[in-house]
Image (tube, rainbow, N blue to C red):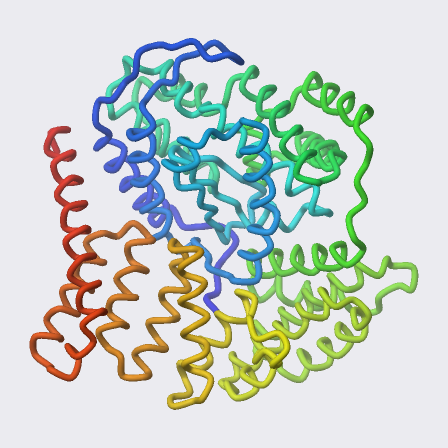
Length: 521
C-alpha cells in the first residue's frame, strides 16, 4: 500500500487545480432563466445537463488524483449508509425521478486526513477519510451525508452558480477549483486564487445561510425517515462546534464551507427533542469503531503515526468500552501490517478476534483483515481459504468478491475462476459504474486467456472513471487483436459488444470535442 505524508505537496495540488480550471473553462453557456423555487425562491442557475457536464469534468480529475481511494471495505460502509438516504429522499419527493436519472450519484473516497465532505455539480459527493475517522456512530456520518445529499437535491450548487451568471468562465472555474483546493489545503487554495477577484471569490466558497438551514431541515427529514437516529445530527454539530473553538490548522475544512451558527445548532436540538430516538444494533457500534480505526490508519500512515496506533492498543484499561477496545486493536493490527511487522500483526489480530468473537459482523471484518494480511505476504492460497463462500451462501459480498478476485488473478487455472467471474458479472449488471469490479474482472479474464474480454473490461473501467479516450484505446486494442488472431475473434457476442461500445464512446468523445470548440478551446 502506498505511503502518504499527512499533507500533500503544493506541486501536486497545483497540477490538480490547474486541470480543474481547464475543465471548468469548457463549460458551455447554458444559463437558465430565473424560475421561482418553493423553498428559497432562487433560479436553478444552470441546466441539469450543463451541471452534470461540469461535474463530470471535475470528477474526472478527482479519479486521477493520488488521494482517490478504492477500498472495498470502506466503500461498502459508505454505500450502506448512503443507499437508504437516497431511497428516503426519493420517497419524500426531495429527489425527483429526472434528477435521479440524470445525475451521477457517486461517492468518491479521498485518503486525505482532513475532516471534510463536499457535494460537486452533477451529483458527485466526496468524503475524506478524516471525516470517517472522527465520527463515533453511523448516525453522525449519515447526518453529514444527508446534509450533502440535500444540497444536491435542492439544487444549491446550481443556485449558487446562478448568482454568478455574469461571471466569466474563468471566474466560475476559480470558484470550483478554490473550493476543492480548500478541502485539501487552505493555504495553497488561498495562493491559487489570485488577482483582483481573490477576496470576492473567497467570500463565495460557502453556501448561503438559507441554503445551510434548508439542507439541515431537508437532511434531517431524509435521515430520520431512512431509519437513522436524528441525534446523530446534534452529535456531529457538537464535534464541529468544539473543533471550531480549538482548531485553526485546516483540519476541519468542513467548517469553512459549511459554517456553524448558534441558530443552526438550536434548530437541530429543537427538532431532535420532537423526534423519538432510534437505537442502532450493538454489532454496528463495533463495526463503526473498527472502520473508523481503518480510516485513521489509512489517512495517517507515516511511520511515526503507525507506531502511535500500535502504542494506543498497548496496556488497554479494563474500563475501556468494548467497542473502543476493538477499534484500537484493529488500528494496531493494520498499523503492524503497514510496517510489515507480521509477528506483531498476528499477536494483535488474535486479541482483536477474541474481542469480537461473539459479534458476527465485527468478526467478518477480522476475517477480511486476515485476508488482506495474507495478500500482502503473497499467500494467495490463504486468501482463497479465508474468503471462499460455503455452499449454503454461495453469493459473496462485494469486499470478499473483490479480494478473492485479486488473489485468483495471481493463481492461474484455479477452479474458482469461473464462479468469481460469474459473480462479478452479476455485480456489474446491478452496478455498471463499479470501476473496481470491472478492473479486477479484467485481471481474471486475462489470466484465463480471454484477452478480448479483458480489454473490454479495462475499457469499461476507464469509462467509469470518465476517461473516454482511455476507454476507446482499450476497445480499439480489442478490435485489433480480433483482426490479427482468429482464436480471439471466435466469441462473436463479445466482438459485437466491443464494436457497439466503441461506436458509442467515439460519439461521446466527438460531442465532448464539439463542446470544447464551441467554448473556444
